[in-house]
Length: 115
Length: 115
Image (cartoon, rainbow over all chains, first blue to last red; front, side, top):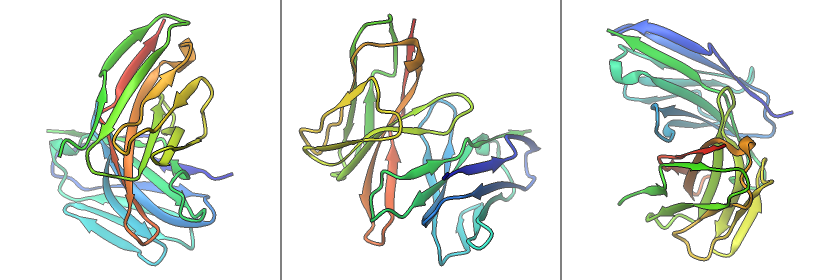
C-alpha cells in the first residue's frame, strides 16, 4: 500500500535554531517528492519538488534531501524564524502515466518556533 | 493574478442540506482537484478534472459531485450533507511542467461544519 509517514508529529524549537523533519515513503512507482508548507488557516504552498535523480534541493533557508534507495527524505530549516511556524507536509507522486491524480500526502509535522 | 479562489470561507449546514463549494482559478491551468483535510489525516482527493468537460473520482468521492464546464471553474456539490462531511475543503489547480511534474497551487480553503 502506498504510504507516506512523517516524523516527528510536532516539534517546538527556539527562534534561530535549526531543525530537520523526516519523511519515509513506500510509494511505487516513484515519480517525485515534494514538501509543502501550510500556515494555519491557509492552503499548502509548495517549497520544493524533487525527482528520482535529485538528492538535494534548496529554497532559501529550506533544504530538502532525497534518498531514493532508502525511500527517505528530510527537510532542513536553517536559522528558524517565527514565520516558519506551520505544518510541513511531505507528498509523494506515484508515476501512473503522467496523471496528477495520484499524490499521496503525509499527515504533516507541526512546527512551532518560539521567541 | 488572483490565483485559486474559494467561496465561502466558512459554512454551517444541517444534515440533509445541499450546497455548492465554489472554486475558480485564473492561471489557465488544465488540472483542478478537490481535497478534504481532516485532523490527524493527510489531504485526501475527492474528485479531479484534467480539463473542461472531463472529471474523475479520487479516493473519497461518495456524497460529492463535480462538473467542469469551463477551464476556470470547478464547483463541488454536496448532495445531502452528513456530519462525516465536516472538514476543511481545498481546491487546487495544476499545470504540467513538461517533465512529468505538475506544479500545484491551492486555494485558501472552505471550513464546513455539518450539524
